[in-house]
Image (cartoon, rainbow, N blue to C red; front, top):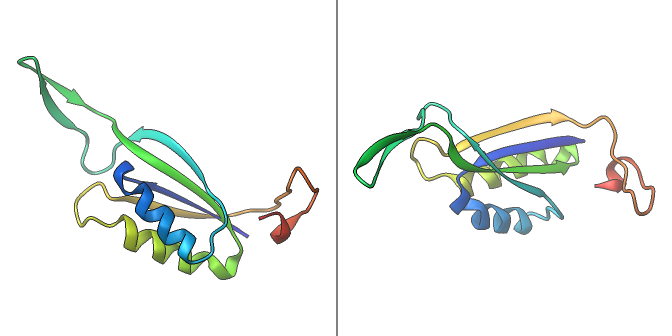
Length: 112
C-alpha cells in the first residue's frame, strides 16, 4: 500500500478529483495549506503599499492506494493539475505499513 501526497493549486482541485474518480479512486483527504517552492512567493500592492506574500495558498491531497494503482494515480494527478506554469505542485509517494478501517476493523488493502 502507498500514500500518494500531492500539493496542487487550489483551482485545480475539482479537475484532479474528477480525474481520480474516473480511475476508480474511492476517497481522498483534502487540506488547505500554504507554502512556497521555487517561485518564492510574490509581491502584491494593497492600498498603495507593496508587501511580500511569502506563502501561497495550496491544496494538499492524501490518497491511500494499493501498489498496483500508484502509477495511474500519479498520471491522473499530473495530467489534471498541470498548467505549465511555475508552482503547479509536487507529488510524493510513501509506504503505508498498516491501514485499519475503524468502523469494521478491516485491515490492509481491504481498509482502503
